[in-house]
Image (tube, rainbow, N blue to C red):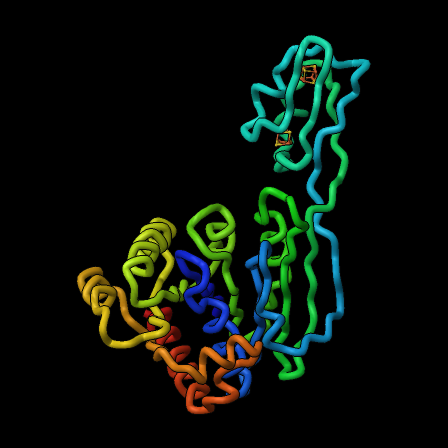
Length: 284
Ligand code: SF4
Ligand code: SF4
């Protein structure tokens, strides 16, 4: 069972849900792997003591121009979707920080003036938490344009022998989220009861429906006052799987880098029930 925990925007409690779910299922004796795919700001590790075992670089191939062979025809610059090459009559420049390493420029060069050279854009770290959760995280180097390759390489570490693999997705609805969702069994959306939460939830659901992935929602900081999200979910026939109340103890745990289900122990059982609901939905 591979579960991606995601949200349409940052700050809704996505990491809180992913980490507490992983912890609770491990307390329940499950073999759990937690992968932090939020490579621009990985923070799941803050909630655990992780003994890292391996760290590997993530490389992309960027163009290396043979200026003596270049005819300045401009075809590489025209073909680059990311404006990472500039060609003038006398000069050619590669803007490495814009390059996504797609390789198109070397394919279109009519005189084979472009070879490729590796550039490190980030890392993947793998280890084990003191609770026995198999842990991994992708880390994008500062200034790099896209974490997609980092996420893709990290997902190669998915262990098929686990009972459950939980991916803490990047926020939003762009390419890194799509990459995280590839091959996933269930998308667990986390939102909050505000107009912003509802707006971003709708965007996330439209993406998930396009990918044909089973989904359900966790409503965080629930106060029972703003009910538009429940009405929307009812109308769209999307299950509300769990609510987490607006609670000062939970908020304090988060700001102290602590799993709140260690403090409010009754939530271990709540997260186990959440997983059972997900399992039941995925089995249908
Ligand atoms: S590898 Fe792709 S992104 Fe990079 S410069 Fe070439 S065409 Fe542009
Ligand atoms: S396509 Fe090749 S020859 Fe043309 S400008 Fe680019 S590197 Fe030079």
